[in-house]
Length: 262
Image (cartoon, rainbow, N blue to C red; front, side, top):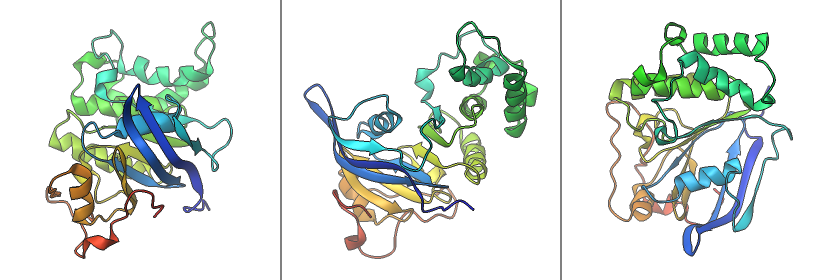
């Protein structure tokens, strides 16, 4: 049985700047086996930058990021924001998902039968069989997001990262996506970067609240004062009718401030 408390990823005292502009300062957090972590905070607060640092796409100015709980040749599933994917490119759903198998291939190698089988399997698992031949440019926002998740999962990753997965999709698609991620989390740790945690609030295990620095890192139950401090103004989270554990009923002193490893 997997130890759900086993540390997979460790971020310690990480700082990062774009030129002379400080984006993150002294951020520390942990990601565990079977974890479902939501990294929240206001737009421009450094959430996506933190994700790119964890993924190794950026190098921290200070601090250290290690992966003690994963094998040296671990596989990472990554679903970027919609803006990073050109929907008008002439590819079918099948083509886009199959691209997720290309990371282990040299450019002259042919697609293997195993690649084809795994692509068919993940399309079936995510209910995308009927869309396999459809051009991605004709998909709805929710459908496209499921395709992007399929592309990330087809390489059998050890952990799945998603950057603003509910941006630009309707309420119904948000609910279906949230339910799908909860099901996937039974087998794989998930990290979601979002400025709107309400769609995931009933299912996430931990929350990290980031705005340049770390204001909270702990269970999926926040004191309102933490959010007020992080966002710089009073914040009220609305659950859209879904039971959740986002705001505590007790006082703000339970808020974990920058530098804490709660």
